[in-house]
Image (tube, rainbow, N blue to C red; front, side, top):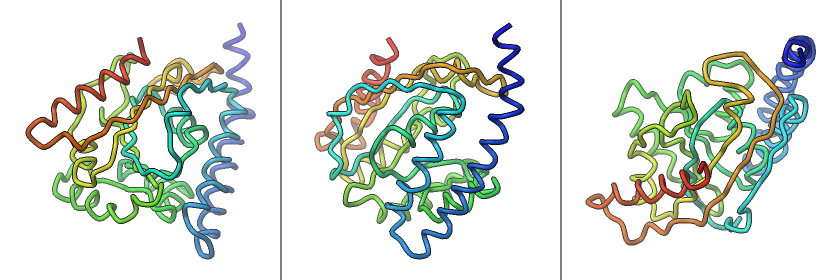
Length: 239
């Protein structure tokens, strides 16, 4: 009965608030980027956008391991991907500036797409490998002075919460730039908004930030070992 009642709330209140907040903060980001550093604009537009929509869901977020993050250090952040709500968790609560590696189709979303482009997020065309690699390479100059880059190494959302096979892109990028990897585990979001549905429900998500992994001892030859170590750290949080 509570779930049925919530569906009225979802359509009458949450969906309109999501639409209005996306338009408002998206437009705010576009305007502010004309005068301000995108790094600051992200804190003024993206973070409150994520927090507002988390609050009205409502979704409570528990955080562990914040002491593992140095805000002046750039990272390659690797997180598991269970739901679209992972975006609200990471953007609203991770507490560092980062550029998102997202699928090119999101550029077409009204207000959100143009705002993400102005903020410097990275759109990749997954259907064109060469173009995707070129886009990632062009993004290197943005990952400096405490600005990180965020990947979902699985490449897509897991339908059952179990991690999918990792792709190499994030780890090759970390080696080329000489950056540490910051593993992040997200759990609970698949119960708030399951993959490929609109069955939204209130709930609690947990984000665990693990100690960074130094990549200086790794090369292309032992890249699978780095991928395995990162996966084990994230899986530990799920366990």
